[in-house]
Image 1 (cartoon, rainbow, N blue to C red):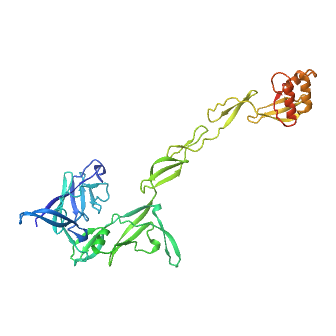
Image 2 (image 1 turned 90 degrees about the horizontal axis):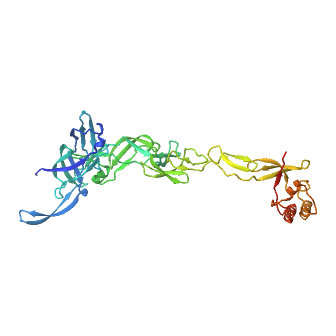
Length: 441
């Protein structure tokens, strides 16, 4: 059978991730250091294709049906050598990517449909990377799951060294301890990512495949479990893993570890909280804003999302005050309040001196004064005071200048029945009057 040479794959490697060499240095040599000699597929993996072709024997067009199979580089390892003679090895995994790197493979197949990865053929596979290339041979065949050349053994070809979980991926499992008591423990789900099996057939041939492909080859379920008692199951630290298919099994050790969520790009979400997505699990989480220092003029600024949050502080205020009123000021900001009148409250009346201490209930400014309307100086507004004011307003009584000032309760500059009426209403608690004349020395 004529050998078919195909350019199977051209993969483009990002030079910004030039592994152990410097980020700007490209490899100078590429070698294939491990390769599969035979790729054995299950017939069920084949895809049938029907084409019309020219039949030279009959000199006419005839229809042919054939099966082709997906390109598989399982078991292939490549070594890159750099100018400083450092080397870096890569293995192709089942996802057609270079394991352990950020490189991506493009153009997985460059063949036409008729000649695409057919069985019972020997292939020369050419790999290219820039001006570098390497080549190997592989035989492709297919068999029924129950064919005579059955799977005789399985082994671990490539395995993950460490499985890293997020803490919230843990689940609660339970089982019996040595005393027969039911206990709960924290466990983590197994992932087959990075696991590659070596399958050996009865005729000695070897294939590298994933657990899913092994299941198709043997027509049996492949079970992956921890191969241990429950109290050690998938806990943090070293774990022993078993891969089994019927009577066949292989096992390997893996270390289980936990990492915290990692958050970037926080944004303010309202209610004094910020939100961010975990870069690992892509879940959204909210946290209380924190840090910063609020003042009476500005809110605190969160040190995480850099947004203002919370309430401003109350003013550390004081008052500038005099006989005309008071104005609010603050020790922490440039608050400059307008001058407002005092809100005086009278203290106990001193009958001997005919005065009371009036204190502002806002700024505590205080002054001695005589209450307006108290004409007779007894410390209370009564009907007698109202009668004196009324008589004085019509010239039946003569008041001293001090009494006249006290009698002008509405402060309109004259005495009339309105002043007397106000005092009378205050005396029976129908109105209030809290004005006074300051006492001067």
